[in-house]
Length: 81
Image 1 (tube, rainbow, N blue to C red):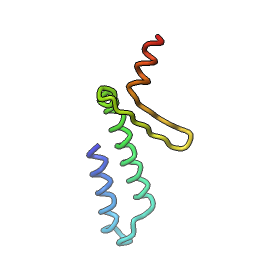
Image 2: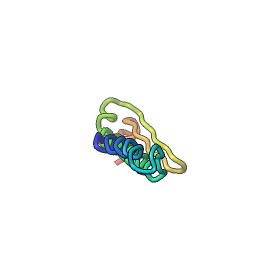
Image 3: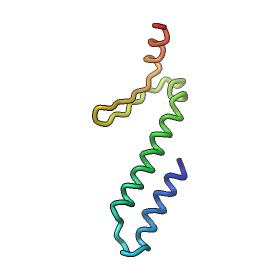
């Protein structure tokens, strides 16, 4: 996760020193967004057990896709089995 953030920062800073100077190309911005978005999603996925133990409810949604984590939902589904 830290590597993605550092790589993103290096891409943005390097774009100021590689011709054409002081112009951040759209490909650099796209790569930075993908790296930071991937790191954020990985952080969320890796911490799901911690969220469940603490009873935290979390929800991520984008368009028609929605991901939610809540301890109550897991307990209810486990009782049904």
